[in-house]
Length: 162
Image (cartoon, rainbow, N blue to C red; front, side):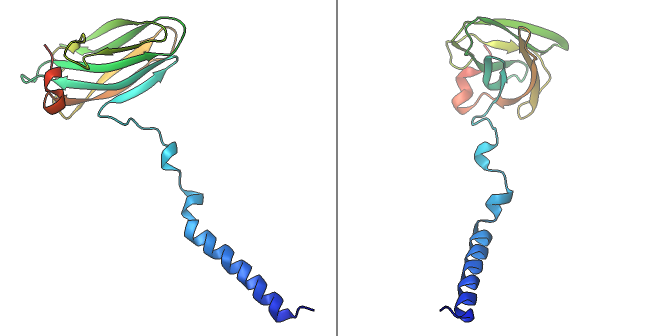
């Protein structure tokens, strides 16, 4: 027959183990897991617009500080082509550039010296600032991206506006 003191010790041990487990891992019950927080693992920003993803959008400003080359990659995972509209301020006026993105394709602009560039002329945005760029296609809701503007140095030296 078990005496009360043995039963009390067993209950105290179980309670102590529960308190110890909760106190050492308790913050995991209340905080958001960092792996569930969306972020862009690059210098640029991105967005999802239906079946078209905008990836790593960065502005590279030339040495003269006037023009910006928009580096961006579009990924169309859909089964239909998309005409992506990119809108920004050029010389104080709204400019819209339309780029076709084939179905199931990845298309980059300005990411290497031989790729076509999207040039934003005289936006009045210095290096280290953010330039607003609106991206949209078809009937999908567009999204304004605040694209970081970087100087054409280091890895970005050959990607300056030309």
